[in-house]
Image (cartoon, rainbow, N blue to C red; front, side):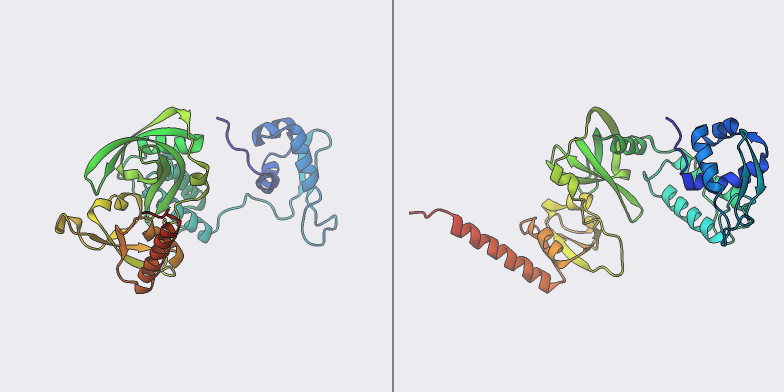
Length: 328
């Protein structure tokens, strides 16, 4: 696969120090090294020729000579060396990359670690004081199952999954149509249309035992693809949280929605509900969410929302009664 080409701005910023270090290089050779055509390089040089310092008088503009097919730099306008990351920029990039490496399935681990090494080499070991180093205790190899899932999402291919359900303590096989990847609380989820359940489900990466890309395209329903699972909300202190009770026959919710159990599942009686905590975006969304489970999920600590659920359920029941035919 061909490497991605740099943007024109990136190329222009690097060209002056590049040509200064290679004064007299031919346009053809420079074009090959920069990954562009001679025609495009000539256009770039013509643009650089009218760039420079404020004032924009002849002595302020970058001076280049390239009319004879060779490039010579007369005046750099201060662009004498390639741009370098500042300490803050390098720290931000390194922290973000290391967080991605530690989140299962998000990126190619080996590629991310190569990027970390290049940044550290570019800024120097002492340029980012106090930043912890990477954990090299494990080899820089990506989980092949994670790679298969990511590639299926990227290429739009259906998947056959062998998936472990934590609440049921069982493994099932199913064919899914990938939609997108979602990340929350250092866990990566595959959002997909499950053909067995005939609905959108979330599959946590670290619970996918095996994944096989099928020789068919991913074909989730249009409405499922258009609206992401909005329950995937970050632990944002500005967002409210609610306690819910979930009946035993609906504990599969723990696998598909990022809820946090408050009571240990192992410590309860088999017929007792499980209490969980969930962050939500709005009362209206939470009301619709609870209504969708027909009483098997109940709001525990928000009386106003519980009342809203009851009112909405009563109105729906009344509409069904009014639309039902009269019986003798």
